[in-house]
Image (cartoon, rainbow, N blue to C red):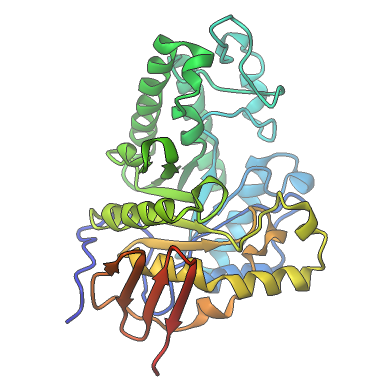
Length: 369
């Protein structure tokens, strides 16, 4: 008997969904220009939802807004059903946007620490003071101008884990910290009110916190549609406890009719300098070899509107636009809930059986036919 995938009465703004192959969301930017026709055709045939990163097309067109505007036209020409999502960081002031020019003229909007000094990321990047209603008004107005200009289908609100980090209390003080948390909730609500009901809100995201022994970030779903789970199996989320918690969070969230973008890694990232020195062919071979474990973990906890995304970074050269063989195989819908014995998880699909050992970090996807 087919398992109930729980996502019922979903909004029309959601992308089309098929369980023929593993559902994929692409999250990518190409700084030097817009995608080639070969890349466009790959994207159009691989997914119905893509987020275009900050700086997309900036070297060719001068700003993120202009680059994404050009990109949306050719993507929608190739796939009229594709949902194209506009990246707009909710906390960090990237000088890659036309909108940055206005923010830069308002020093009263720049976030400061409890000593009155600018709170800068890595000593150079300004942050948004989300407790300031004028900052939020500028942010939402800039987004709406960009949505109209680019014809995007929604927004990717990045950096929530950076906003809610408990370490910020030492920087801003308890009172300011609480005000900024309230400001983040307000920003999401104000964004939904401006976008209306036909645009998507994706945020980053759900993340394992070792000190709390749980994955956090589900509290923003009242107004949002989708959360990215950005660090599955990598960085500080590589422990068996972290991976299990993230799988359980995806299962829990998608059963409520929300979406999760499950970001997985091929055991290296764009920060691994030695691996990046390898030829492109070798990096792709490593990524191909390592895809089974994170894909199997995804299939263990996936329900309707779970999306898999796999790469070693966020740019076009980071393995995103690569036809991984495992993502072309037919899995069908899940026909059971997952089972758990210790750290071993199993699940059956129409055309595949999945087994994961989180402790040994081993997995198998068996295709009987």
